[in-house]
Structure formats: structure tokens, C-alpha cells
Length: 151
Image (cartoon, rainbow, N blue to C red; front, side, top):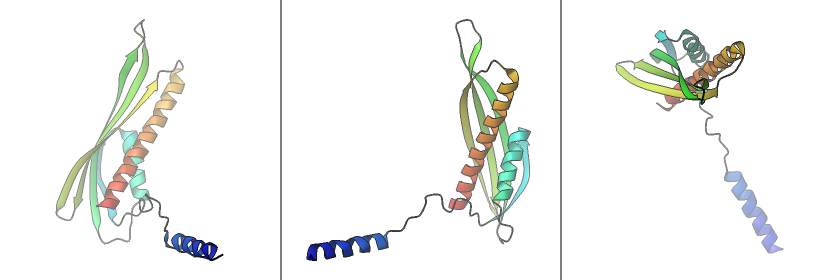
């Protein structure tokens, strides 16, 4: 009987001191007012990144960040079959960021890749490529936001 009481108290004590906290709980908590000063490159990806940055912006903050970025999108041939027709592509997005905080400037780049098969229908392939661009832009945006929250 004494063992049951002891283990019950020990179990309750251990459970009481455990704190569950998700790893990315502070991911969307940017403590800066973010201003996108300029961007160049792929227009579709740039618009998606800019809208994500504006969504995570903290307008009431006194600290400001000036961000400019350049995006380069390439669609490379990854594989061909024996007849020489293309079977696989690789979508590659390289985004170079320049972040200015007060007197400090930081440059870094984020590279995202995605491999996909060629489709027989050109319309479906174009829509699929647009979806891939959106997913790559979301990934780049989340990496940027994560980097801003860490610093």
C-alpha cells in the first residue's frame, strides 16, 4: 500500500513539472517592423515571399528591419530516357537576402530544390510548376521568419 502511494505521488510530481512546448512555438513571433525595400527576379515567387513577410510583420514594434532580396528561379533537365526525351526536371530557387538593422547589414542566401516528373499534358504541368513555386516560396519564407526570430 505504501508503494502505491509513493509511486502515485512520484508520478504526479513528475507530470506536474513537465512542460510541453512546441519547437516552433515562437516561429511567427517577429519582434520587428519589416519593410521590404526592394526585390528582383522571379515575380511570382517574390510576391509570395513579400505577402508572407507582411503577414508576419509586427507593426507596433519600434525596431525596424529593411529587407531587400533577389530571387533566381531555374528549371533544369534532370533526366532523359533512351530516346532522348525529357523525363525529369529539377526546380531550383536561390534567394539572396540583404537585411539591415540600424547600422548592421547581413547578407545570406536560401536555396530550395524540388525534383518532379514531366507530364504529358502541358497545361497540367504548368499548373503543377506553379504549385511547386508556391511551395518553394513558402519554404523560403518560413526559413527567413525562423532566422529573424532567432536573431
